[in-house]
Length: 190
Image 1: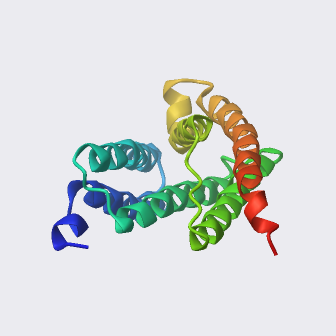
Image 2: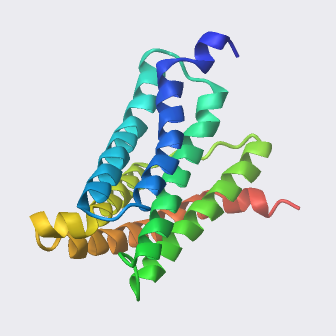
């Protein structure tokens, strides 16, 4: 891979999304609404780059193996760390921990399945429903990251975030099953 592809704008956006993870995490160590708004702002910028890095890489023909590897890792890191932070702060608790666990488990299982299938040179394309799942998941995270700060501005923000989290979990189950079904034939060849 050429140096120009390593430092292409799509890859820089992906690197930025990875760097957003510790930045969001740092915000959770400060009290008050300002920290929550800052965490939300960083998260939203990172979520928007998720769309643009892939779009620009395809449009400018700057797709690279590095980008293909790092893009899903960046997504999963951002979602997993936010879920953990929100659970630690109590924004996700009780029965909603099940939704968070479903999302985390699916991310790990699908990553493992994709890695296994990649060794077999089998591609599992991302479905439209999986893209919707990601969108709902990101909206849920954003609402929950706003937390008490969002609740002060727009009452019901946290409950809307939990409802979106459950919807994302249901979509996660379905799309996870979809990926497993697509790969099961390759798992049973021995």
